[in-house]
Structure formats: C-alpha cells, structure tokens
Length: 160
Ligand code: COA
Image (cartoon, rainbow, N blue to C red):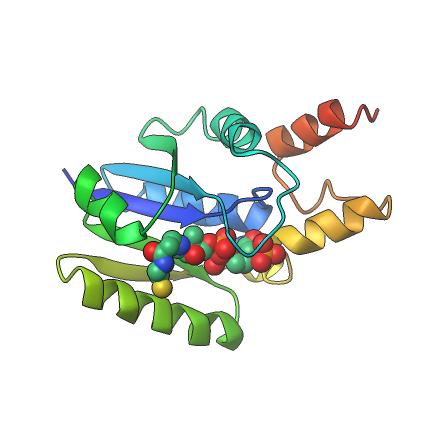
C-alpha cells in the first residue's frame, strides 16, 4: 500500500491546503493528514479542534485519514510505514525552506521521498496566519478557508 503524509500545523486549514489534499489523495492509496503543534507558533485552534475541522472537510474523501503527531516527522513516517511526504509550494520562498527540510528529512531517513505540488495560483497568497490576521480584525475569511472550516469558525466565535 502506498501511504503518503501531508503534514503541517493547519491552524486553520486553508483552501490552499484543501486543494493539495484533494490532488494528493489521487496519488496514493492512503493520504494521512498529520497535524503537528508548531513549537514556534501560538495556535488559535487546539489540536483537537483542528482535527475536527479537517475531518469534517475531508469526510467525502475515502482514502484520506486525519491524525495528530508530535516529535520528528521521520519517526512518525517510519512508525506508520509511510513512504512519501507531500508538500505544497506557493513561491520561491517556500522552495528555499522546503528543499532544506526535504534534505534534512532524507538525511535522517533515506527510505522516504518528498514530493511537491504547485499550489493552484488562486490560493498562492493564502496562509493560515493571513486567515487569523484578517479574522482578528473582523475581515471576511470565507474565501480563504473551506466550507466546513468556515462553519466551525462561525460556531466557535458565534458568528452568523
Ligand atoms: N496553501 C496555503 N497555505 C499553505 C500551503 C498551501 N498549499 N502550504 C503551506 N501553507 C502555509 C501554512 O498555512 C503555513 O502558514 P503559517 O506560517 O501562516 O502558519 C505556512 O505555509 C507554513 O506551512 P508549513 O510549511 O506546512 O509549516 P508548518 O509550520 O505548518 O509545518 C512541518 C511544518 C510540520 C511540516 C515541519 O515543521 C515538521 O516536519 N515538523 C516536525 C519536526 C521535524 O521533523 N523537524 C525536522 C524537519 S527539518
């Protein structure tokens, strides 16, 4: 079975992430979305909330599973018998960061591959931080996150 991991902090999941997930799901027998708590970022949503939002959004993608993990990515993929890590690229800036991460991971575990998908240009400006910033100033975020994530945000913050 070809298992692929798409990991990130997903705080919250954006339309860009969702696009990569839908496309990645076609490339593997099983795609695992691995939510990780970033040590450098203050989260807006708990890991459980993020898992709930993502699970609701991917419910109609039968080969997509959602999990939470901590520690080194390579330890997680070794344990779960995952062979491929999927990443999205939005810009040259992402590339600089991603190539370094892919090379460090490959040095730590040489049985894995990292594959990159170009983000759909409609979403190249979106990031989780942008969603949080726009939201914190009362701006519209429904064009930046998928439907179920938006519903969750509305419920949590009791918006109409
Ligand atoms: N569409 C929209 N936004 C995207 C995106 C896409 N396709 N791809 C990435 N982003 C955004 C994310 O929303 C995030 O935004 P933010 O900085 O505003 O929160 C930003 O780009 C960075 O995302 P990502 O690269 O996924 O970083 P992350 O912090 O969410 O996750 C891990 C990084 C978890 C993959 C990485 O830190 C990791 O593997 N950690 C485990 C520890 C480890 O093994 N370290 C050694 C590796 S060197």
